Length: 464
Ligand SMILES: Cc1cc2nc3c(=O)[nH]c(=O)nc-3n(C[C@H](O)[C@H](O)[C@H](O)COP(=O)(O)OP(=O)(O)OC[C@H]3O[C@@H](n4cnc5c(N)ncnc54)[C@H](O)[C@@H]3O)c2cc1C
Image (tube, rainbow, N blue to C red; front, side, top):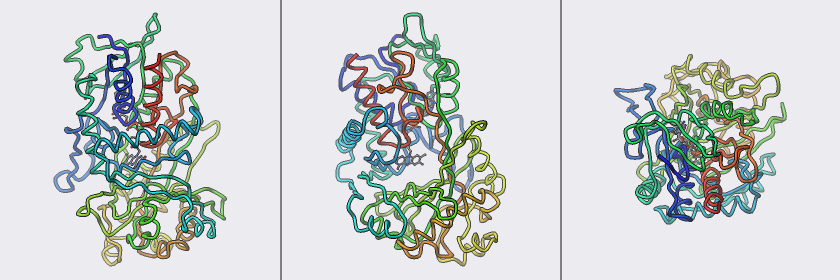
């Protein structure tokens, strides 16, 4: 089977690349190979009753399938160069912002109209943060919400399905460079029913495999001798508290990205993925259960709590190279002690005692995730825990009540980073016409940056 463009992965990066390719040049023959299911078949079997924990499905419906890791996400599109990736380092700040705004316009025209756009610039809260050693990053945030995000994906798929060959439940196993400089991808799974040879050829190949494809991406880099950079992992916890405590921030900004430099170690701690009136969820990455959060636009699904992550970035230097392995080991430790996610009251954490079910029942904050009450000091390294506690007290000054005894701390939250593939200003590897986009490239870490990288590469391919 011969294609013009082979796209690997149908997360935001792959979807927006496909969308833009067809828009710019509808005659292009484009194939998308996706290890996970089609959108409507994506469903995590954990129901909290019969199936309480991860049963390690062949493809994880939370992380994989049409929509990628973003499908059931909170759908917060942060339009900024301040965080969410370093796309601007390759394509320039102006272009990166222009493409993020373009992605926003596509989302709006596919079901996202009417959703709110928040902005942090010039707010009174920014000043209050500065006065308390906290730094509020500038961004415009389009909040689609998990429900509208899903509608947008449905509409994008409906528009693309007859113009692009989608192969779901199909994992690309290997990429080969043919003698004429084109690419051959070998796959396993459902595509074998249509393409019995088990491979497809294409002049262009775009790899967009996200976080869940990070291990596979490493093997591609080895096979094709692609240069890589590493080496970061973000570790921390998810904080849950009554929504009123953060309402000054969330009503005005929806999400405040706040960075704090600790006095004790001069380490940076940052808030991440704030979910007003949301829920805390567990998430499975390569068999390791970590914590995350969601929120909804639908009033009926809103809870009384707000949750957000507090993360500390760990950068490693030689001889240690496996930053994700370090993060995984810490998450495994929490899984070993708690069977999954651990929850602890801040008061117990600071007193050095384990939280038990009785203390949770007696506390004023009702957890939205059924996690195991435990002791996070047995899991997280002291330096990280100290930094998190220090930041909670700093936040308490701008949002009094943050450091209350009943504030719930869930662990662990890990943000794995893909090693970064060395790419030029076109997001192209050392091999001509082989591109790497989205979180799988290590350049982006967010919906808007990943989507924008897809548009950028698609425009370039259409031109070529
Ligand atoms: C619970 C959750 C909430 C989030 N909330 C937000 C948010 O509100 N805002 C935000 O900006 N970001 C959020 N993120 C991060 C965001 O989802 C990612 O940054 C984004 O999805 C990256 O897009 P991507 O296309 O690069 O990769 P992904 O979305 O990870 O998609 C990659 C796809 O490639 C497929 N794949 C992998 N390997 C192969 C292979 N070998 N062959 C075929 N297919 C393969 C995978 O199955 C996957 O579907 C969230 C993530 C999670 C998990």
